[in-house]
Length: 246
Image 1 (cartoon, helix red, strand yellow):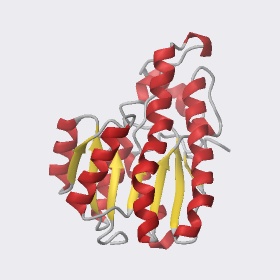
Image 2: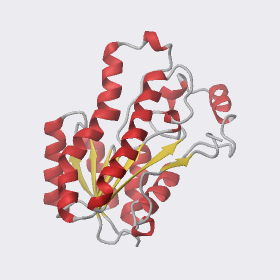
Image 3: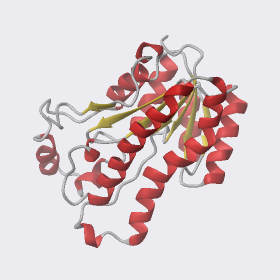
């Protein structure tokens, strides 16, 4: 029960890595708000886990503000924020990504971190404590070709994490990031371009441990970084990648 009575928001928490993190948080005693663009999936996940649910578009300031108010109302406050929601563009040469795709990637992967910080950091400052976890990617550390703008958005998130950690340390708020390799999530086929046995084998050949990151892997790492056991850990980008970045 490392997160006993902690109050946590997990964005993109209705599926994939976000659901794995939410599930682990609940198991460790946290009160969790699953915030997702997919209202039906968020409600179903919350019912399954005994959590709360909220609909959010993390690229919208008004929607993030509403999510923050919902968390305060349903949880009684916010101790932990997990910025997990993310999107990618399909693998293709950088100059062929449309402006619309580019804007969407940076709105969801980067602007969202600014919007949640704008809404929630003042609450953590007032409380004198808090933990923020940004879900980045190995793409921001060891980028693959043809995912240029997705890679760049995750590199942005890693820099933001380190900067936030330094700025918020005097206020008792820690900020860390996770860098998973691709996993069994709704984004997997988008990263690979096509989900075939041959493409999976090619992808897995770059991971020394020989498997994808799982939602359980992410939940375990997230629970540690957001718990008091990690009270001296801030500004860290933890690779949950089976050795991919070595």
